[in-house]
Length: 293
Ligand code: DGL
Image (cartoon, rainbow, N blue to C red):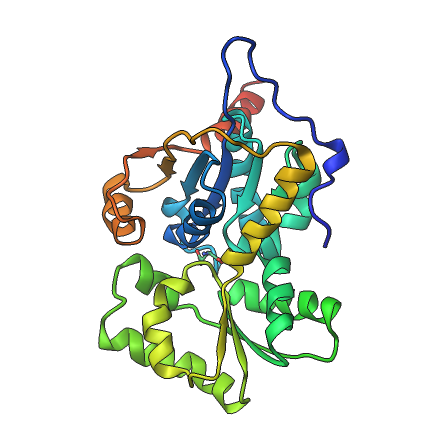
């Protein structure tokens, strides 16, 4: 799975006398992508970011591939209008089901989390468990990506449909969440995994719960950490790395701004200003134009 075709990418042109900074677009269905945003802040502190959470259509992990493709195209079309210089799919489900298809449809680089996560996992493990959304687990994306890097590694994938709703409802510390986690991890522990991959960007938010269940010897791999390494390489390759202090991050959601602002504050360390955006507008407009003709 190569990264975006760098040779076909044309950098956005800044207006003379008015130095413009172009943001990196980051998207997820909800607060999961904040785990990637956090890593971008840590590893690339001078980059300006645009975060979009498609909270009105969450969860993605129980949707069909056709729906995921439509949602991803909506988001990328809107991000293109915002003149982003690159997009990070901070969503495994989108990376597994849509990345390969949409990559050639847009003229900016688009990076996903699966290949960087798979590469990192084979560096540390031989018996790898992957917890993911049902759609990602069913796609076999991690199994394939890991096999491409090292076919001798064993992989077990578990779909965890309850995790994303529990995280989005802020029910992390409830005993029920602990029970659900125990149930999902049990088959992986039976297989004596040595490594666990967070195959959904929401799941690092569950680390305090998962750590109490997993033996201390099991290594946790967070693809968010590794996709940012790939972003840095791509920025350098394209000469797009920013050196000036960044613009404030723009946060946009398709659902409730208040809910997102309150929920995300615990991971961002401050309550963000959040805009509501209907990314479906473009698609709807073109449909209504077509039907008016
Ligand atoms: N956080 C996303 C992922 O990595 C999406 C989860 C969902 O909406 O089901 O797959």
